[in-house]
Length: 90
Length: 301
Image (cartoon, rainbow over all chains, first blue to last red; front, side, top):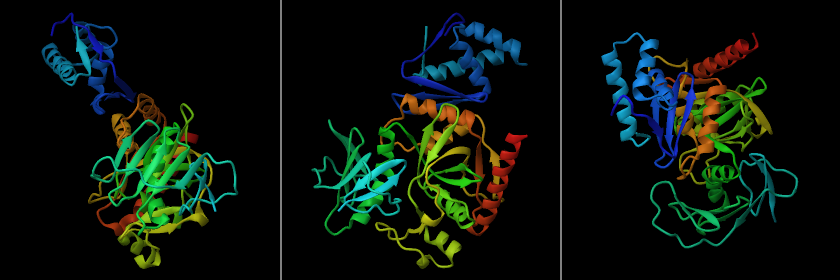
């Protein structure tokens, strides 16, 4: 996965924001995936046309966190979403 | 002979009485229920029921041989049962899981929930089987609050506000709950196809019609130190609504997911935590009533 990669939400995946959190539903498998407020912000940025790198840069402005920690967490989340076939990375 | 009932806003014409369904004057039916010959069972029934589909119908097969065939346009149910059973027995299936499919096919989301009228608005109680929905509903009914729906609650979608529509009047209770509330379980009649469960007929304290939802309480596992009411926010509220969504073997649709999300965003949703000791149930009711009224106060100030 690279900084310039973009995310596409896979067909059949819906999301619902409730408060600061998001619940994803895969209509094909009927499975759900919950995102906490930080995960929801990652989702919002990377599905809103930001590259993964741009999303990390934006979140560094918003959160008091080390770049290395944030990069690791964002890449882990995106990897998990991809593994669950909720998104595709291109 | 036919019988006319009102169930979840539908005028139902049935060849046999539907226990607990409020009677109405003869009218043009939205749903017709007939006693019919069973279709061949497609596969061995495992679990609570099998649900299969063909070109014109959904077919529920239950382990004891009861079968319900629901027309795809949800305007007819053909019910069949082995000769050693009664129509009352077979109708108990119709009143929950079968009717929930009918409502769903007619565009209503249905929740595994009960609903009670408290201060002119509906309060909905979600939970898995055994969580205590019926206990809470019965106890509120005994305190003078009218029941709206039991076990199956159909949601009316108005965008950012939501309603529930009245169902049937038989609240199903376990013997220990019946004993707690009535002194002896034998005070209440047995449900036709249950060896243990009994029903409390609330037809004299029942709210007919459609009512705005004021709040939703998701009933948690019983815990020491309870009863109490807690906030249920964010994705937890939506996930509890999804878990309570009545969808017999059918996947949730995008429209239902959207609806449940709007409910979670717009309706105050709380967590009711009962105590492991059933004797504390009256304190759970007090906590819920206090919370409902505190919520009402905060909305008006």
